[in-house]
Image 1: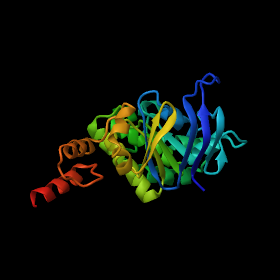
Image 2 (image 1 turned 45 degrees about the vertical axis):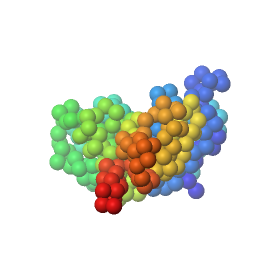
Image 3 (image 1 turned 90 degrees about the vertical axis):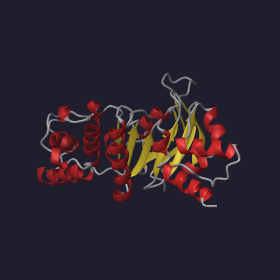
Length: 277
């Protein structure tokens, strides 16, 4: 059974037929890293909030780890299984000491103190922030704050991590820190990741890319499959990863490159082959 199962989901803020998310079917399997792309207003952030029970669907059904978001299960219980990271880490940090902030959710669920200390320590290790355990969050960089926010969620040992534009407010160094941290949690801990982003190079690192347009799923597949559809991607007002764009332009000018080029390394290998012919 999929860890996230969205069945014919529609959502409207005014309960009218003005659907921000419109008849979406989306299934995510355990351990997948799924990037969700779309221009502003495409419905991607609303989709994330539906997964975290900040909203419930106007139509359709959402099952998170088998729990119906419109059922009798408490929203807090679902959020223990599907944690969410927002754009601005300052909106998630509530304590004046890092380790106390990471412990906040555990305290609210009544986790015993001895167990809590272990979970907090492990979570800070997972995001490479253990040395800052006794620091004041407001003195940290944006990337460090976001890693603390992630630690606060993963201390709850969720099955799913939903990241809604988690790198949007960060500089390139901070962005790299966060994407590397989340990829590590996905690969080493098996945490399923929903990665909402507008950075194409981040989406290229995912196992799967879902493109939304006007509240509907427009494309869904492996990054190499999705980004090979250059004209379709541009049709909905999105760019493609720089190396995919370069490959597309070179092929348009009869340069014989291989398929599925998304990274600098892949481009380097292809061009090296041509130069050695």
